[in-house]
Image (tube, rainbow, N blue to C red; front, side, top):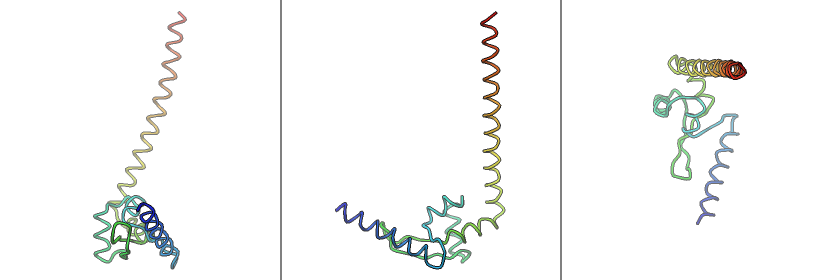
Length: 121
């Protein structure tokens, strides 16, 4: 039973690879498009329903699976001011966290030096 499942999963992955190599387009499941682009699954659904990105349905290991071209999703996401601002905020927050970590590390070094001085005297 488990071997049948593994074989079916391998066949599905092979089919995805064939689709990805056809025409130079990388077709990915919605979950992968969501992870790669930072776009919510509901937005992705709205985009393919409105014809803003192409999609296709293929048989997956758990039934029909919706695929979208990753390049088209990334291109559409770039045109979205809201998504671009969210990504910029995320980068900005990451930069702020890195700066704060650096500051805390420097303060810890200074504190350790002061404690050492206090202990010596």
